[in-house]
Image (cartoon, rainbow, N blue to C red; front, top):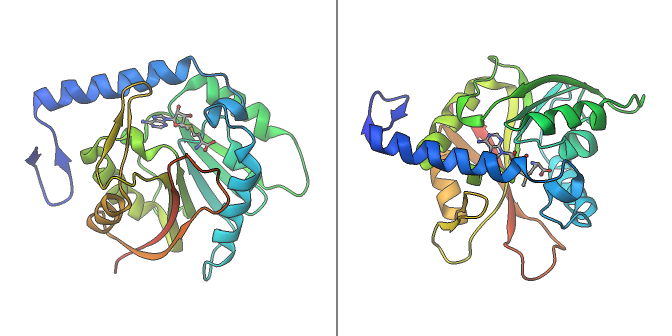
Length: 235
Ligand SMILES: C[S@@+](CC[C@H](N)C(=O)[O-])C[C@H]1O[C@@H](n2cnc3c(N)ncnc32)[C@H](O)[C@@H]1O
């Protein structure tokens, strides 16, 4: 790894090739997954309700949370957009790398319901390439996707997201964490599961302070623990 400047960290050419393979394999994996809630949840569609309930409880406690605009990162077909974010925010944008998922999201989240906010911009691209408009988002929600970013891209992602938040904006991470204290690789979907400490370290390095951490309750035994982490930019 080489340091280019204080703000962005870049790769050598060999690292770039490994990185391309890592993202290419994930793209292939997701292109074969059905564009359904069940597909988004690895066949555990019944977790949707408990997951959204936990996320709602987490958001409810955050101080001075704005209600204008949210961003769903690695949104898939928009399961979180529709069930968690659209009921709370006037507009929800989506970033997702798979075009068939974003197409499905238009249909899944686009149904008109007066109680919901509207679906905004859809960015069909990898998070490693996405830069948000400055000051746009009250919440940037990242769930079950950050394991698909390399360490360098994860750090640079957090650094870019800082400027995308509104004055009282929060970045929320909701991810599986390993209990082994090690980064565990999943060669099947080309992702990693990091220990909680690794997330805490990269979040801080990325320019955030952690204001709240909570373990998702009521998930079945045998799954990775899932943690929600709310972050605010450091001054
Ligand atoms: C486990 S699914 C979760 C989807 C959604 N967050 C949810 O909880 O319903 C992971 C999603 O991340 C997307 N993804 C994988 N790598 C990505 C990347 N580099 N950038 C953006 N999205 C990515 C996949 O296409 C897939 O839609």
